Length: 77
Length: 383
Image (cartoon, rainbow over all chains, first blue to last red; front, side):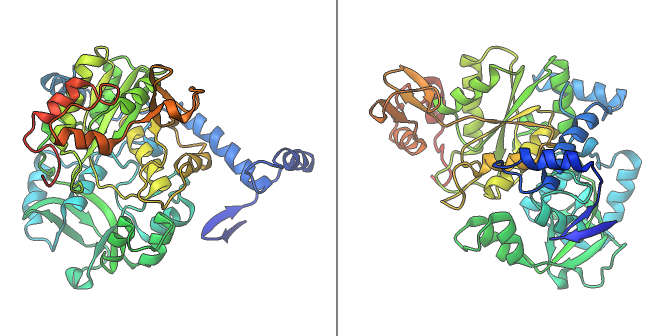
């Protein structure tokens, strides 16, 4: 179920209560204000590293040759 | 491998071939909106991927999401709203779904498909982005003088904005290929608005020790009186690179976008743009993109903690100074000596020396750099 807090949209994800308690313990004295903010941080990091593995070529072979020609003319290559 | 474009895909909204020719003709018949230079260059930045994944000016959902959560609605980090403000009379009769032509200097440069027209709270924008409502802050001043409505929608580029620096103009698709051709797997981006002094060189070389390449990316465009002229900055870097950097480790190219002076938020924005150019790392200065005393000295570093998924690694390099006892450039983390040995590299003092026709001391600026600056009749804006 989605809900809105402070202009942002949120949803609920379940984690084991034992894990919740462990996280609650380790975030004491850190900058994390809640278990949710810690979990969000970690998940964003993990998701980003997964997304980094997907690499699309942003140019066609024709584009590539034209760009290389420009780079040579300008003295970059 | 160079960094992945921000949001996963490099934006390309540059029209080509017959479609471009046809739309260029049609643009003359469409409702017209005249843009200032700052907006015109940002249209080109959007179209050529500097602002990837943006494909146009923000609609309201994107705008509010960025303002409040510093993320796009799909959770991609984004800290500065990219918006187009208009007066109601400028868009009289225009409704969502319409195409309008964006003109710069009496030439059509792009088409905008209007998706939304919405109102905005300028003070809310200023408080969130600049963290102040003080009219003396240049960003706040500019914001409060902007127009009443925002136009959101995707753009298509018909024509680039003319530049005095074609030789130094590279777009993300080009730098990404260039870095690959050079075999660089890691590249650090350096943002600057200044001619290089020893402090800059120290910071760049400290970073370069750990990566394959350095991308020096001066911001060109409007500058305040007393700043170095753009052509002076480029000439100074050329001579520095020629004499003091190994071959093939530096790429020098310009970036045209306005300074927002939004401190921490802008530091992240600067990192995102360099990520799109292919940088894997980005040097974040102390009080990066700050002005006056509006931001704490380390706020521009702290904000990066909120973005573990930024996809570009910030390098927090401390301010460099010359230590008489160490006999070289150092920073507070690596120099144990007291203040009596420390000489701050003062941009103001360097400029004063150059104005009087004297080379600054060599520990402040390379003589070749000083000479090339002094070879210009008017090296500073407004001289």
